[in-house]
Every structure is written in structure tokens, then in C-alpha cells.
Image 1 (cartoon, helix red, strand yellow):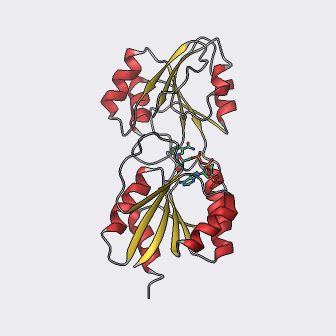
Image 2: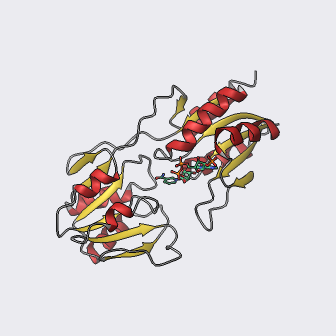
Length: 247
Ligand code: NAP
């Protein structure tokens, strides 16, 4: 039985843990950063919290006798992806990235593609009612705009009251249906969506909803790391890649 470290925090990471736990050759260990108060259950082993940079991750890989690492973290989680790359090089352990292809605008989409959250916030027209789905960690730039109204969706409500100019926090964890996203945007009379271009299915509902409602989207491009890591775009590819080290 080979221990496979899955750097998780995504639906793809959880699905990979499911798949590997049914395979007699592997023991999946899912690692979560520990940001979400009550993370979803995963199959196999679970550990939580940072490793302590590259050095800490190298120590962990050796101590736990990890056979291979699958980095299934979110496309915007760049620090852990870089750390995994360098740690696996140092520990001489195979590494692949399980990730998603970015969404591509379709007929009916009205996207303004931007490079980062700061640019996204700067592009919001005065007086907008904005649905913000870019996560809890980068809200500061929005807070500085008192000329817009924001509906901010987060997984966990902030423990202490955060300074949100005018607007509202709502808690919710995907996947959300297109119908629910349409209703939400209508109920709050949202006229603009800000989203990360995360790819994948689980959060695509809001993009289809915006298309249906004819709403513009400020779309933040995923960072490109160009580390040269093997990239898998499906569970099947990830599993084939792992099997390749067995024989
Ligand atoms: P990040 O900026 O790339 O990483 C910051 C630090 O958090 C890392 O250096 C590492 O600490 C720790 N860390 C991150 N992911 C970890 C994991 N899976 N297991 C153990 N430690 C981890 O990460 P982030 O953007 O904050 O994302 C944190 C988690 O949320 C990831 O699991 C990611 O998949 C998930 N997530 C992120 C986003 C997003 O938009 N960024 C969206 C959805 C889900 P040490 O250096 O101490 O090891």
C-alpha cells in the first residue's frame, strides 16, 4: 500500500480521495489548509493545517513515507503549489497537479477579464450592486469602495463583524444550481458579478446564471506558475499517472 498525499480543498481533491481509497494499491492522505470551520468529509486519511513552508513539507513527506503527491489545490492557491513543487524536488517524490481548465466565454457572456482582485475592484462602475464570489481572503479592496453595494458570499460567516461599506455577507457552500444562482441575483437586484476564473463544474452555476440574466462579469484570470509540473485534468489521468509508478 502506497501513501499518496493529496493537497486538497477542492471537489476534485475529494473525488480523488474517493477514487484512491477504493484502490488496494494506495492510501490517500488528504491535506487541508484548515481555513474552513467544518470541512466536508473525505475518504481515507485527513490532516489539517500548514506544513511550515517547503522545509516543513519535505519533513512531512519523509516522515510519512509519502510515495507520490497530487496537488489538487484550487487554481488560485499559488503558494502551496510552489511549495509542493520545491518540496517534491528536494525529497525526490513524484508530483502531479490535478487541476481544471479555465472557463472560456461563450455566446451571451459579457466578461471583462482582469489580472487580479485589485484590478477587478477598480473596474467596478460607481453605483453597482455587485455579487462578490472571490473568497474571504481578499476582501480589503472591496471594503475601500463606499460607492458600490456588495453581496459577498463566503463559506463561513466572519467571526467578527467586518467593515463592509454598504452590503451584506451571506454564507453558502457550493455546488449551487443555476436556478438558485438566478434567484439569488434577482432577489438582491445584483447588476454585476465578480468571479475568479476557477474552471470546473462546481462553481459554474453563477456564470450560467449571469449569462441568463444578461449580467456583466468581471473575471479574474488564474495565475500562471509555469513550474513544469505534470498536469492532469481528470481523475482518470491522475490515476493513470499514479499507476505508472507501480510497475
Ligand atoms: P495558498 O495561499 O497557496 O497557501 C498559503 C499557505 O497555506 C501555504 O503556504 C500552506 O502553509 C497552507 N496551505 C494551503 N493549502 C494547503 C493544504 N491543502 N494543506 C496544507 N496546507 C495548505 O493557499 P490558499 O489560496 O489560502 O488556499 C488554501 C486552501 O483553500 C487550499 O487547500 C485551496 O485548495 C483551498 N481553496 C482556495 C481557494 C482560493 O481562491 N485561493 C478557493 C477554494 C479553495 P505552509 O506554508 O505552512 O505549509
